[in-house]
Each structure stands twice: as structure tokens, then as C-alpha cells.
Image (cartoon, rainbow, N blue to C red):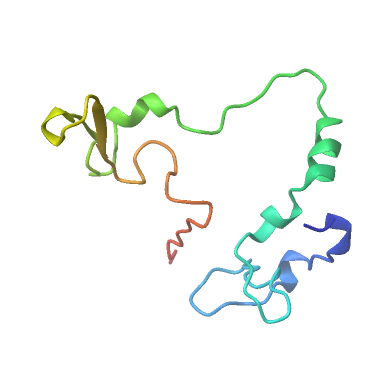
Length: 123
């Protein structure tokens, strides 16, 4: 990863338009030598950036931005709730248990990936 100082970011109004997407798209900014980047601004998160950010801490108080994992019982938006089954392995010749989990990756926090994106067209 490289330093944030090695990038020259355009002003918002100068960002290129991407057909079918809202203004402000910076897709492709971190592409290099014809290779599509998959990290985006995570490219800027390196040891030096984290160290410098730690110097900004004054009180130690933080704001929790994620949704607690115990909210799995409230999937919301018509999504299926998590299903957790414990399978006895004795019938398979093993002494032990297996966990089987069926989950919608949108249940609770984002389980699918940092690449998750959604664009809602606004009229």
C-alpha cells in the first residue's frame, strides 16, 4: 500500500460521470497498469495512516457504527432469520457436534464483504 500523499484526488465536481450512477463516483481511481483495483480507499489504510490517526485520539471515547451481532434475531426488510442447527455426529461415526448455519448475509451487520454496494436511483 502507498501513502495518501502519493494520490492527487480530484474535487467532487471534477469527478468523472459513470453512466447509470450518481455524480461522485470514483470507480477506477485506484486501478493501476490496466489492473482493476478491488480495495478502493482501503488502499489508504496502512500502518502509517493508522499510527497517524491514533495521534488524533484525545478522550478514548468512541462511537459504535456496527450493528450488534445479537441482533441476528431481527433480520428486517423481509429477510429470513438465522437458522442454527447442532448436528450430532455419532451417526457419522464421530464423537462430537457440528454447527450448521443458514444466514442471509444482510442479517445484522454486513457479512457479505467490503465490496458490497448499492445504488438507489433517485428521481
